[in-house]
Length: 120
Image (cartoon, rainbow, N blue to C red; front, side, top):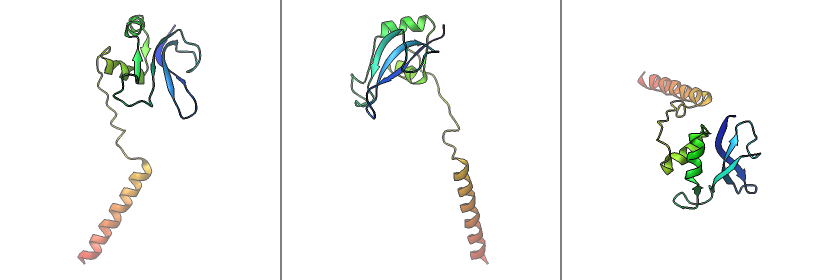
């Protein structure tokens, strides 16, 4: 059984609240889970102690059994010091989209034409 440590959403519309749970990866996001490991309240300030609460002993137990944390939970575990920091590299994130690149090329072409016309 493939285990995941992930977030299960609760709370009302536009007021998110998440439970950190250990669940079978085949179950739905807010569906059946095996154990509640903590909570995450993104509405609280980042420096608040109540923002992320985890039972680190149980989290470590599930990690030892082979449970894979999702990306967001992995970042929380790194912040808590339970997991070594991993280097993330997404070189495509800063690249503009196709339309923005086309607009930039058009602008550069117009500037070159204007410079040519001004030089004559």
